[in-house]
Length: 170
Image (tube, rainbow, N blue to C red; front, side):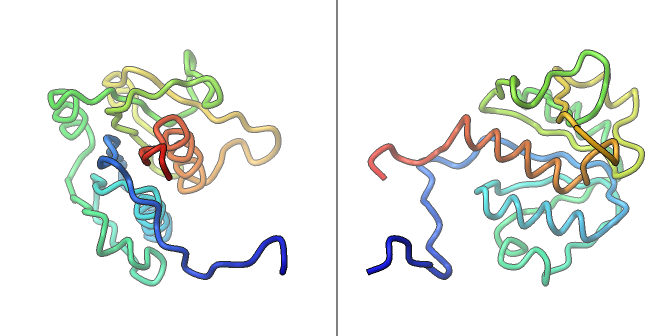
């Protein structure tokens, strides 16, 4: 018998409780990026995204997550950030700024709103002013930043690593 055997479509690991993270996205220029982030959330057990703008989820990219993840559409990000703060979320932006904390060192709060900027523009100064923390992912070559869906995946992976959410018995 082989030491490793491929398992096609292994069932998801059940979470003991729903994830307490929500993603708040600035308007995405690319529906592909939005759809990849929806798929990421489905795989990570994140049930809600707030997307500002007119983006559409491509079901061929998002796959089953298009049915699992609730995507709330809003017109602009600033009122969303104020509402999430009122609901008790810690506001953590994903951006390159002065005073940011490296993702490798950042300790997420379990109840986090991960705020993600648009592909080219990032987060505006008004949006940055609403944040408690800014998380930065170091870049060691060119180009100067990661794709928005890739960066979001890295941050969500780190959140899930810090809060696995499954029963220790598994």
